[in-house]
Length: 111
Length: 114
Image (cartoon, rainbow over all chains, first blue to last red; front, side, top):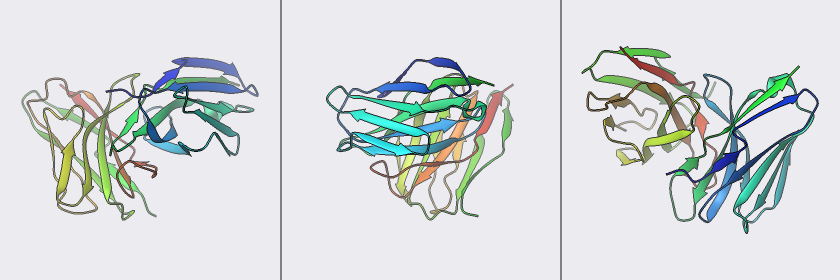
């Protein structure tokens, strides 16, 4: 079952622009995480936001969480060509033991 | 260096063969996971283990088997019963299952059926 769904599926921007990706989910959660995957590689954890938090920052990353709308957004500011990757949201259901990943947003940053 | 390793990086299987993918971690993590990723898709959970000598089926366990005899190791066997095994396989570990801990991923094994 797929809990998180990212939007858009693909995004192409110029270097220096901001990139915004959205994630929607269906059930109540403990927390929501964002991961990054470079082509043909494993995933790398970016940021975790708990269900009682509304916003979190890490370097050029800003994550928001709206539990009433069951949605989250990941903002990458001042994007670089090296940010080109797929970005996945992942949720842990309340009372569950599994982390469920969405299908991802493929970001392409043109130099 | 602490981390999680997978081997081999590429694996080719003939029809009807069983193959085993290796996953080892030295992070002292209790929980380990196996995911399958198809081109352009997200991750689907095959099996997970919260503790040594215990494991649970994920969403797509049919045709796969695992063992967790040691904390550091969580090998995945792709059996001949798995009809469409060509995919990218990712192993991960975390301090504990789900909840508030991030997962650390290995570099993946790309399996191709000839």
